[in-house]
Amino acid sequence: MKDTIYRCEICGTESDEENPARWIAIHCNDAHLTVFKWTTEAAEAPGARHYCGEAHAQVYISRWFESYCGGR
Ligand SMILES: [Zn+2]
Image 1 (spheres, protein in one colour):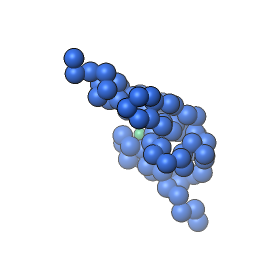
Image 2 (cartoon, helix red, strand yellow):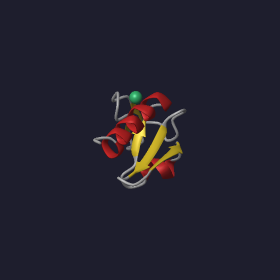
Image 3 (spheres, protein in one colour):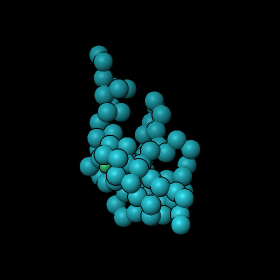
Image 4 (spheres, protein in one colour):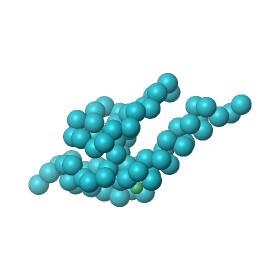
């Protein structure tokens, strides 16, 4: 039994697959944001965020733009 479960940050969907189809990993800080096709390496990197698909990755990307580019 695998002990790694990934959870989509937007909807809470869980995946216990090592390489779930169509999931996306995002690495970001306040200066840049990088979208990764799902790989174990990208998913397990420190600070990586996990999304069940493009739509929910987009939700996070929009929030990221709002929080770092908005407020003017
Ligand atoms: Zn989701």
